[in-house]
Amino acid sequence: MPSHSLRFRSSLFPKIMLRANGASMNSFISWTARRSASHIVLPIFYKVAPSDVRHLKGNFGNAFHSRRECFGEKDIQEWQRALNEVSYLNGWESDKFNNGHEGELIEHVVETVISKLQEDFQLNVPQQLVGCDGPMKEIMNWIDSPSVNARMIGIYGMGGIGKTTLAKCIYNQLLNKFGHVSFLPDVRETVRQRGITYLQSQLISDILQSKSQVSRIDDGINIIKSKFRGKKVLVLLDDIDDKIHLDALAKKRDWFMAGSLIIVTTRNEAILDQSEFEVDYKYRLNELDEVHALLLFNRHAFRKDHSPRDFKDISGDIISTMGGLPLALQVVGSYLYKKMNRKVWEDVRKQLKNQPHRDVQKILQISYDALEDGHKQIFLDIACFFIGKTSKYALIGEMSEDALIGEMREYAEIIKYAMYMWKDCGFYPSQGIEELKLRCLIKIGDDGTF
View (spheres, rainbow, N blue to C red):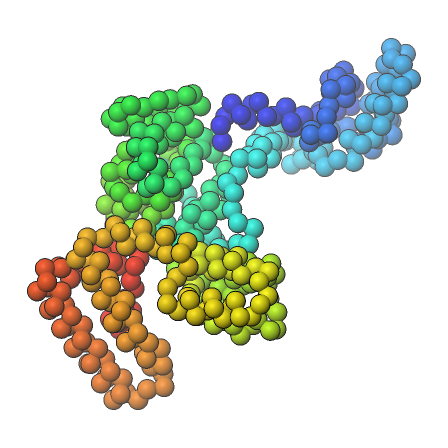
């Protein structure tokens, strides 16, 4: 949140303090002359009851009436109307707030104003949010735990899983606790197009509130190290895919003031493990379960939580084809919105069985393209030959013990021969499988199956 923007925009939130002796009457009169519809009034009733303001009684009423002779009747009527309006607004009575503790009242008013101002600076998140409550609660519980250091959170998962959306929700919820904030979206692509110094310049400008143009990476690092230590910052670094980029923006904990929080999203868990900052908390974001997947799809395909009866079965078929990837559910659901011809839905279902939607494929392709050639081949072999092979284990509870042992032995033999084959081809399979896991392109179950 730019601090100078807070000062500038605070004019939108006039704090009207009404005193019992009427000492604030001149400032109130001045405000009524220049107020606009965009103002949000936060009244403070300082040692005066709202009812006295409303009915012009007590010392406040006496002070008001003593000024009547100095103004015209039209002005007096306007002020009476404004005072009556203000007296009904939600505000604070100084005598009733925490037993009249004025210091705490001031702190509470400041926090309220900052919070309302920061609502204009919240990051945009989809209205059809589904499945964020659980991860949000878990991560926020950790954030709320006390700490004497700057901290870093890493959210990782495959492309299109919703990492950025989750990180934005956390960022928005924390805004009012930080005086200096910065959001750097799509770091990977921005570095490719403009270079890391562009992002260093943006980060420095956001936090220091002064235009900065960094030309060398080392210069940017030195500015961040020296200037950020006295500021409690909230920084969101979205889609980091290279340790070098993270090091240029937030390499070490002592670059930042205690209480600062750095949120990193990435497709590659290794980026978090290799960070010299030493990530304090990692959260893997997984696919939506079947219930939440259907809910998200319905909200995009039908703009409501439930499928029409005629489309319930085919909606379930489409979702089972796509799995619980939020991006796929959103893209395909939005494409099918208002398309009530069932033949179109059937074509989409058949098409998805052969290949993902082009917009989804483009996002998933990024992780695949980042692999070495040998690791790409291992990934393709697993996707083509092993994923389907493991599907029978979903029915483990219905298999006899002997049948299960036989199936597992057969599977183990196949994996063993595959490892030999990949090794002979020079693909370094142990390293390759670990890389695929870290990039969230595959999962390995407790039983060793893909």
